[in-house]
Length: 208
Image 1 (cartoon, rainbow, N blue to C red):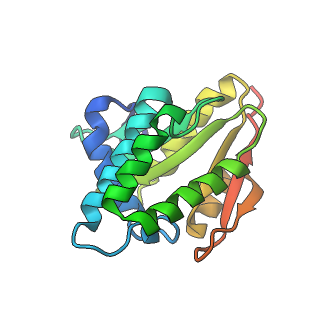
Image 2 (cartoon, rainbow, N blue to C red):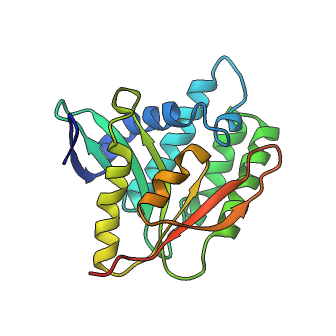
Image 3 (cartoon, one colour):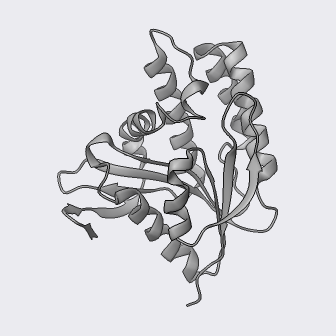
């Protein structure tokens, strides 16, 4: 695929991508109005966040349908973690390990807040079958080239082909118009204490 001067290959995320994916997610969400404050200022803030994002990426590799945009030099330009109907972004049997990771890195107070946010997001998800775009991030070197939305569009082709609606949460209002151009329609809002309101989006599959 090509967008301007940006050529890349869309492929499934692999276990060998986890470290690079975690770094891209950290860079992508470090200044995010919702996800950024989830990781308090600390000398090890980057390490804490990267450990969290690696855990999430590992869940996607093991139970989801994640995609990456691989650049010609072999590096990753963007990452997206998708989950098919019936799958959560954290498996029930791994919730204990996730909570332990949070408490051992960001501390009890921040961990409780983040776990609470997760519950709110889970409650807002549709009950009808859908594919869930949990995370999308673009590497700093590839920003502004349209790679992120092209990676989403590649996944939408897959879900359109099987007639499956898709769902996402936009944690940064700056991205809302981009999702709407792909056919997403505003759904519920998630009101997180101390954070901007998060707009959720649904997209019906395009006619074949």
